[in-house]
Length: 267
Image (cartoon, rainbow, N blue to C red; front, top):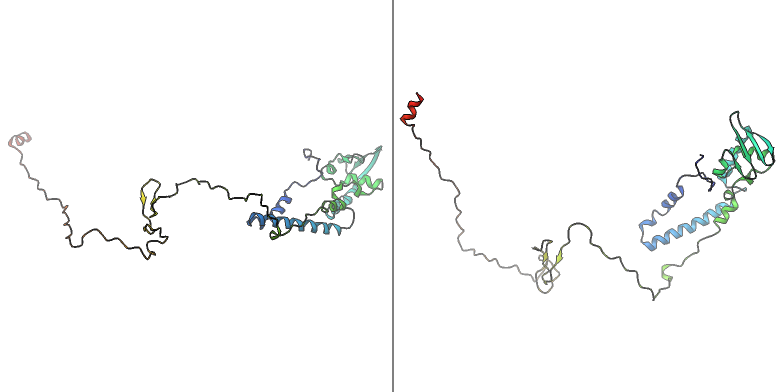
């Protein structure tokens, strides 16, 4: 608590505001750019009016949630005993080991609760009760009803529909971004021949199913009415070639009897 900044006088450390805004534009993010911006503008315009109408119905000087927090601190301040030590300095004792210094002019207390939250703590409320002053006067001004009304007094102006927009003749149209080659395998390229043959990435021609007529027929081979299948070049009357036999001829192994000399050595 001693390392937090006291510049904002606000103790909220979460990003609830951005999360609420992201939920509001969730459906608009899926739309095109102009439609998305128009949807976000309309939602914010209606939200500002709704918040202002709610603030006008508040009763009292403070916001409802701040009023509840202040009422809780007022009940807890009844167990504190303030003592005036001189000028605008007070010493407040809440227990044997809890003792703090309160300065009403500086709006600063040794417990640093008011410095961090902007709402009077139990020690400051004990002093205000002693001096018969209103506790609402020692709350930061941005927690008041009038401040909220001033914030939501600035509204978004309405805009005409797209059909009533004025066209700018001297403005160049916004073109699509340039296409970049994605990483990965190279794409196929078309040759300059009218037949529309395809070449692979290595440069060899690939088979195509498009019509090979030189007239630039957009149909495929199976749907083109003018395409004729080529006549096969092989002759049907020629006898088929006899298959060669790959069977290996049988081999015989002859047995050679040992000589007489070798038989004597064995003995």
